[in-house]
Image (cartoon, rainbow, N blue to C red; front, side):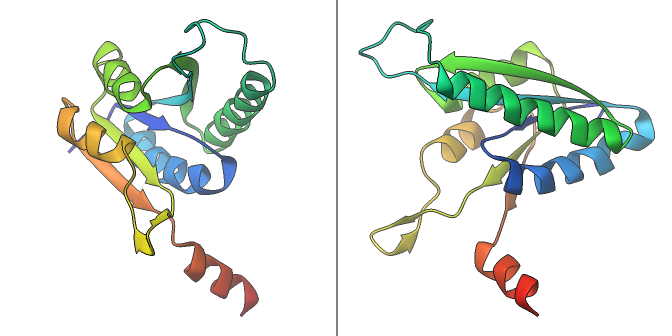
Length: 149
């Protein structure tokens, strides 16, 4: 299957680079395009266009770092920073607006009541995405163990 446009929502630099590596591998041969998205959730007690100061600055730095990572891999990348009430619906809307072929979600290690938890975003995107969704689970315990060997 060809993936000419891939959407990769990012939260932080560490696990996002691995998800972007996958996106680069899938799009490079066809000179595809990667859309890198960061969504800042805005609480309901603030206006949607509220100035989020430090959050925005931090997100812009992450997006720039991720775009440079893709460019170094020889893949074109575009970045978007959004503020939204619900992160999952913002990701789905972007996938529709950009008419992407694939969404790659980096699943962060979350525990709730001692059990692994998918959170709210991933199930929403899986249920509502108009295109395939690839989940990338960054296993922190494995990575830390590999670093010490």
